[in-house]
Image (tube, rainbow, N blue to C red; front, side, top):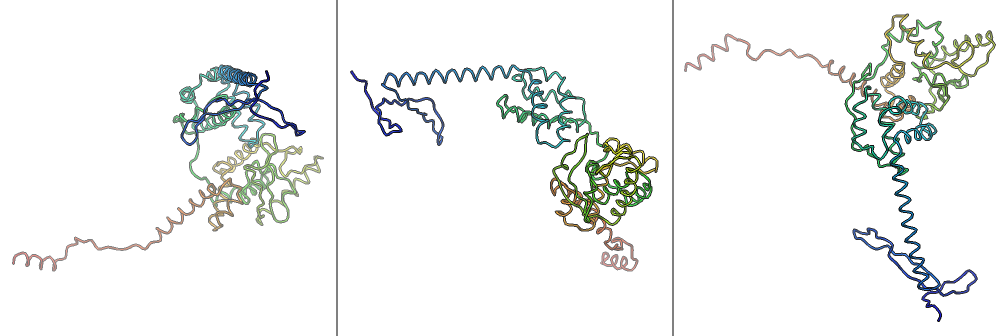
Length: 398
């Protein structure tokens, strides 16, 4: 007896074949606030054959579910540190993060997390309370803790994205730690200090760098990445930075060009003449503006130490090299340069950063305006007047 059929399927050649089709519920889903069944059709040569296909589908789903749960279980048993190592050196260090950011995150992991008790705990056992206790136990400054927290945040986003773990950081807060900042607020060079610096740096190897930072607002790393061809046609073109032995785009990819101040042009001409002659004497060639006497690129740390020795030798109060950029931006604000223009010249990530300098200037202007208010001499209200006092006494007697 022929098997029953209840549907036909048309093949590519146009020929029709008879089959038996069944519809079965394979799960449920929420739709418009209601729980509705999810249905799937199974087609076979007969009803029994279609039922067999449905049974095979159910078995396959059970197998997939088991394998997924088994995988998740094994993932949860794997140590927190194994995932951290894989993320930091396999993902983070190959990412598009800025070089300085990658170095800071890697250092935070290597110094504070890699050999900690946290690294040995199975990932599935790491809860919000575990991370909170880890933060509390760290003997670090507030700034270091923030760097560790940023690495942890990026790490858990990766874990969550790959379904290794849920992101448990939403319940974690940063405990209070000592602040190791030397200064608060915006630190700038006073006019007399800048005059002293540039006047005493006439024979210093980094004299032109001081001019670049003061008259163009460049960072040290951007100065170290400057080539002679980047200073041309009346502009300083910021196209790269050199930091930790690596050439890379400027911070926040802030490619920009800054008009050359007349004093900066003079300093550049003197620098080029002096170090072109040195290169000829020492028989080296370089495209970079700042090099050693052998033509090698200068390192950031050595530049910082050289500046510190210079300040001490000339009895100039030492300030962070960022003070040059802050001074440059502050002077732009004082000159009334629009916020958006100043931000572009500084290469700031956003105008909000530049606005801090403008807020500082506005405060100065407000103080100056208040101090300009004319003084008023007021006669004391209870000052004794003999005639008026006598008249008041007569009224009282009446």
